[in-house]
Amino acid sequence: MTARLTLAMPSKGRLREPSWSLLEATGSEPLTPGERVLQSTCRNAAIDLLFVRAEDVPEYVQDGVVDCGITGLDLVEERNLEVDVLLELGFGRCSLQAAVASDDPATSLADLDGRRIATSHPRLAAQLLADRGIEATLVRVAGSVEIAPQLGLADAIIDLVSTGSTLRTNGLRSLGVLFESQAVLVGQRTDKAMESRETLTTLLGSVIRARASRYLMMNVATSNLDAVTALLPSAGAPTVMALATPGVVAVHALVPAAEVWSLLPKLQSRGASAILTMPVERLLP
Image (tube, rainbow, N blue to C red):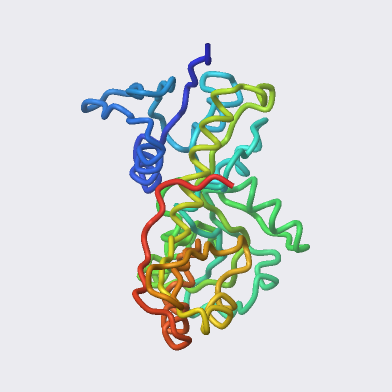
C-alpha cells in the first residue's frame, strides 16, 4: 500500500493559485479548503495538503513536518536548509536584482562595492555579491524594500523583480540580475525512495512538459513531405499516416508551444494544409 504524502502549499501570495492549478492538472482533485482552513486532502490521491507561508516551506520539509513542498527557489537558497529541489515548476519566475535611485551615479554591480544595500535576502545576497568580489554592508529589510533608499536606510537594494514596474514606480533602476528564481518542488534529503513522492514528481513534471507543448496535425502531399517534416523539431519523429486521398498523408507531431507562432506559416508555405494544433494534457518522457 502506498504511503500517504504530505505536501506543503503556499497559503497566499503569487505562488498560491499557480500551485493549486498545477496540482489540479495532475488529476489528483484537491478538495478546496474552507475559509481559514489550513489543511485539506485530495479526493483520488493519497496526498494530504498543508497550507503555510512559502517562506516556511523549506523548514517544514527539512524538519519532516511534510514530505514535500512548493516554494520559490530564492527562498530555498536563502534559508540554506537540508532539502532537495525535485522539480522546477515553470511559474513564479522572477529575478533577484540590484537597483539604485534613478539619479545615482552607479552604472554596474561593481559600483556597489563599499555601499549599504537593503534586502530581504541577506544570506543569498551576501553570497552572490561575494562571488563577484563585491564587499557591501547588508541591511535586512522585511516588506517594501524599494522604499529603503528614499528613507536613507541604504544606498541601494537587492530585491525580487518580475516586470520592473515596481522599481520604476519607486524611482529606481536595475544594475543587473544576480539570481534567477521560479517555483520549485522540494523534498527531504533523507526520503528519496518514497514511492508517493516519485509519483507526485512524475505527474507534476508531465503537466509542466505538456503545457510547454502542442500536438500538431496537418495534411501534406507526399511530394511535399520531406520539405514539411524538415521544419519539425528533431526531438522524436513525426507520425505519418496514409489518407483515403491518393498522394496525401496526415502528419502528426509534438512541437514546442513557443515555436507554434513562427512554425505554422512556414509549414503552410511548404504545402501543409488543414493544420490543427491542440493542447496536451500530460506528457511523460
